[in-house]
Image 1 (tube, rainbow, N blue to C red):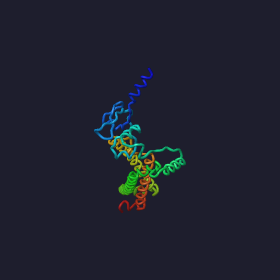
Image 2 (image 1 turned 180 degrees about the vertical axis):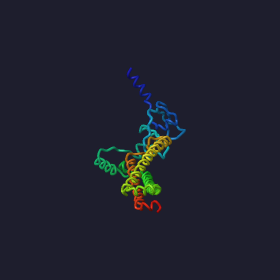
Image 3 (image 1 turned 120 degrees about the horizontal axis):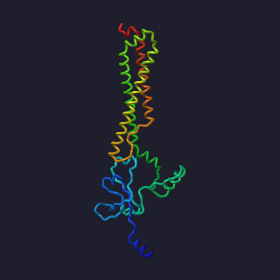
Image 4 (image 1 turned 90 degrees about the horizontal axis):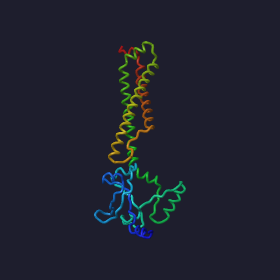
Length: 266
């Protein structure tokens, strides 16, 4: 009974399997176990394969601009479809330690003419040039926004303090010292800065959630487009406090240096 069974298995070889991108599965309504025909060009004979897995898309920024489907198959099957014979365009080698990386690069580069080895970190840097430019552009916008908001905050504080000229004059005539008036105004400015910073962080967090939800659905990727980190919140709170205190201090010093009777308009 064993020999006929072996002959039967040789006559009907195991079905080849492939793995497809989850976007392709959603768009073409393909499920695991479905049979597909893969070929180099549409309309010609190809190989019948079975879908054995659906790949989840990775958070790779380089894939966002390309709306391509991904299919993974066995190397021999890929060579047959692509028309390649024992050759590849590029391949990845995992090494252990910096010394092993240097030895591997040296061996690959000296193996034959046309072989060129690069570190994965160097390739990542080269392919992310566009994102570095965008990051610098965002930093420039952030600096301009902070400077403009600081000037706007100072103007608001000057106007608010000017409206309280009579209150400050009454306090001075009652014997309240200049330092006490300055401390009160600076404390009020710091409190307002903290409240404004809290509202800003809340708006930024909600906006970040909405941006990620929208663009992750548009591009169907787990990539995070907007991120609010503790470092960003700390920087925002620090800048808010510093700018608020400085604005309150400048406005209060300008006011307390004026004689009380002059504040009353006399």
